[in-house]
Image (cartoon, rainbow, N blue to C red; front, top):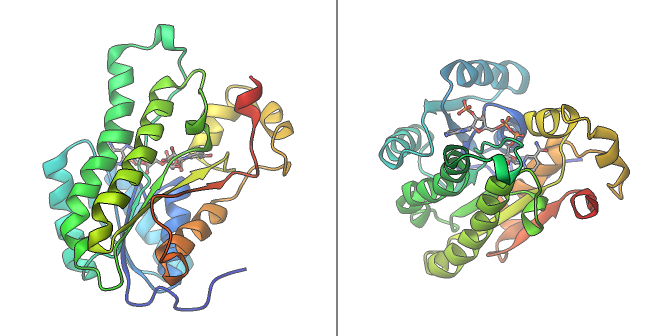
Length: 260
Ligand code: NAP
């Protein structure tokens, strides 16, 4: 199943954290449907390996720069350079995030602050860095933040990530309201557990929660990276042009967190 060939021809996109996991599926989908894509994250070795794989496996040329979303000046510089190479910016996917499981009573200030800085402040920094380019986008710029279905509920063991992702969702609503005048749409996608990702491996499988989580997914399986990538394409292309300030859950109706 896919979208019409070339549906994103002429579009340019940046995906933060696009070298690994869900981000890499998003990059593949955007790139193979015609967009020029750049990726930004911290580890150069992962960026280089991913760009090689995108070329060899998918036949797409992806531009990369290192950058830490916590650093507003650094991320602006990385975005400026990427935009220079991909020829503008129509689609910003704020996918970079960090998380670890820790009961709140044991959570240090540094642990709390680090996740808030990467997830919430990082998303803010990326949106600010992209604004001038998104304003110039011909068909209206798109911001798509990757949240989580768990942000809508309490998240025992991940207070920092839950608070940050909830904050991101509210930020998208505010940007939709403030930047709609520039034609910019700001939305978020809430993935459920996506198989084969760092998130599921570390936060679910390694915690011994794999079977429990699966039992409580009404559709009975973990999601796939392409499920999220397809939702990004919908929101990035003409198909999603009247959607702004909205969240799209792509989670198989996951409810396990409510039952714990
Ligand atoms: P992942 O592979 O660990 O992806 C996270 C990416 O973010 C990495 O490429 C990482 O690269 C980058 N990153 C982390 N900190 C950064 C920073 N300070 N500056 C720049 N880049 C940074 O994890 P994933 O599981 O695919 O998650 C991707 C997104 O989906 C996240 O927003 C996550 O919250 C969300 N999500 C995932 C699931 C799931 O089932 N996996 C479920 C719900 C939501 P570097 O370390 O090289 O910087």
